[in-house]
Image (cartoon, rainbow, N blue to C red; front, top):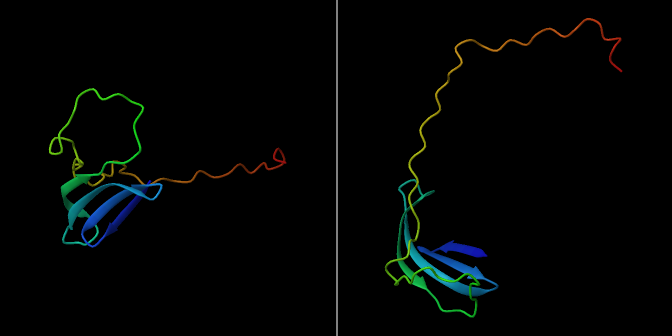
Length: 94
């Protein structure tokens, strides 16, 4: 599976055959995708061996779901960690 992201379009290919294409917009930071629109699912010779539970029209299938923003981690440790001294008897090692 190949995913191509360029010129405001996302293309999904398998074995050099385009499966689907979407339009998208970047967030203002230029690193994250803000919105995916205009889905185009193409007919190919690839078929799923899994039977469909129900038929979805072109506007009904889910593209992606936005994940909630990550919350910053809370530091629960109030005391610094202390390295315990190693045993002075190293004759048992080795």
